[in-house]
Image (tube, rainbow, N blue to C red; front, side, top):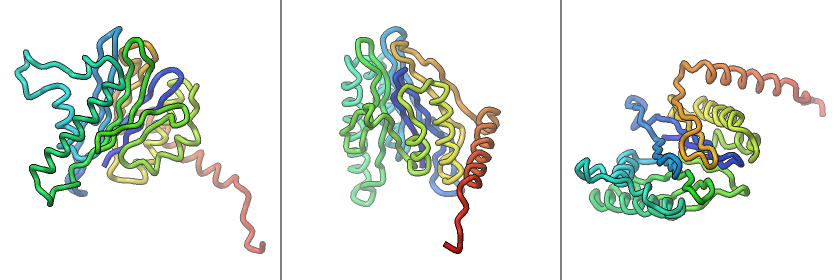
Length: 246
C-alpha cells in the first residue's frame, strides 16, 4: 500500500510520501513514490504515485521517455505551458497505461493495475497548483476549500490534517503536521512505512526549498513520534471522567 499527501499553502506546496510496497507480509520492498523535475528559474513539477507499481513506473518511464536512446530522451512535463497541461498529460498517460496493461493481461487481470497520482508544482507566470489524478485519467484541482489531497491509505492520517491544517502556516509547521499524520498512519497500518520522502516547494522559487529522506533513525521524527503519543495520553486523561451512575 502507500500513503502520500500534498498540501496547498499560501507559501507554496508541501509534499510527503512513504516508500513501502508489498505483495504479502513476507515480500516488502522500498520504492520511491515521489518524483521531481526542475528547470531553475522556470518550473518545478513533482508527482507522487499510489497503486500498482508496474503501472506507476510505466507512467514515469513514458514521461521521461526511457525507452528511447539517451540522446533522444526528453521530459514531456518540461515542455508543457501550464500546470493544467501537465495534469492533463499525466492523466492521459495513466489512463492509457492502465488500459494497455489490462488488455495485455485479459479479463482476469482487469482492475488489478489501477493507480492514482498527485501532481504538484509551478510554472513561471502561473500559481503553485496541486492536482489529484484518478485512474480513469480525469483529475481535480486543489483549492483553499479543498486544500490537500491524499492517495493510498488515507483514513488514519486524515483527521490529523483536517484538525491541524491552516493555509497560512509556515513550512516548519506543515512538515510537523505531515510527520504526525504519517506517524499515525504507520502505527495503524503495516502497509505504510519509512523511509519517507519530503519535498517543500516555495512560491516562485522554481527549485526545491527543502528535500530529504526521513529514515527510521531520524532523531526529529523519533522525538516527534514519542512526544505526540505522550501528548495524546495526557489529553485523554485530562478529559472529564465518565460517571457510571449517570
